[in-house]
Image 1 (tube, helix red, strand yellow):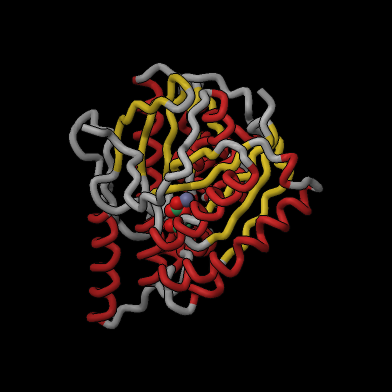
Image 2 (spheres, helix red, strand yellow; image 1 turned 135 degrees about the horizontal axis):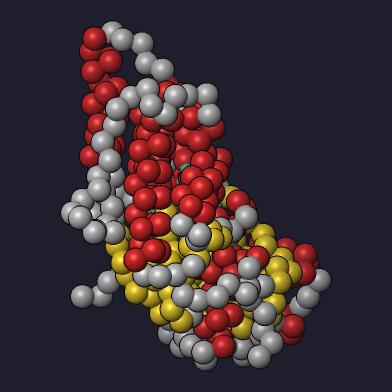
Length: 339
Ligand code: KG4
Ligand code: ZN
């Protein structure tokens, strides 16, 4: 089945619309970032995000059509992220997609944001052979899944407290680097020594693929407090590098071990933190020692965008997995074990 999907993503602070042909060809991928608006508050302000989405959504839809040189008549399906995310922000995208699907009389597809992150990999590598083990590392999730069939997830592990991206953002904030923190930590870590500060790694119980980053976060914050109390000058690049090293050690070790245990040949990385080149390189290094392949999306498709939602929607369209026009935003939509 041939698809030309208009995909809308407004779960957080990016107003994004893409047009994707057959799950792999990016005809348009417009991302209107609100980062500058939220930067001065040190994080995303939900009310402001919803208002900005409202202002931008129609403009971004029109821009995507123009970039793709298409009209609504060429679109076969409308797809939208319906959760998880900020409820007010999600509602803008969901309302827009529903109106378009109704007005244009085309099927509607609801996509879980996290599934979108995974499918960013299939845009540039549509021939990925399943099964794979995928590590999803974003601002809200740190999850390991095995994927045997499209749309079916075997949950191997997840974070018990902070997500990896959340930890990056919190430490960046404590170091005065601002929002979003991940890219800044990566940048500053380049000039630091990853062994300068001894930080904990939460391996948890033997054989567990769960994660925990709150202990690491507290250890860094305690270290900063101690230095301040004793009047010791801190070396920010050393802290950034040591923190990044601790997070990477755990993510790499657990992912490669899960891939080996579940006898897959390929590891996928997904989510905003997978834009981190240090993590990518360490994962490749460790996986290749075991003869495993690592695939990740290009940097611009790691963070939130509409293209990934369009890719996930294509595979849903193939399964005739459509949403009713009563589809609602679900801020707490799960991507986790159900029991
Ligand atoms: O996937 P994403 O764009 O949004 C969510 O669905 O959460 O992920 C955003 C997260 C933020 O925490 C951000 O700091 C982190 O991804 N991030 C990075 C990098 N780029 C973005 N973390 C580490 N290194 C990066 N280069
Ligand atoms: Zn995301």
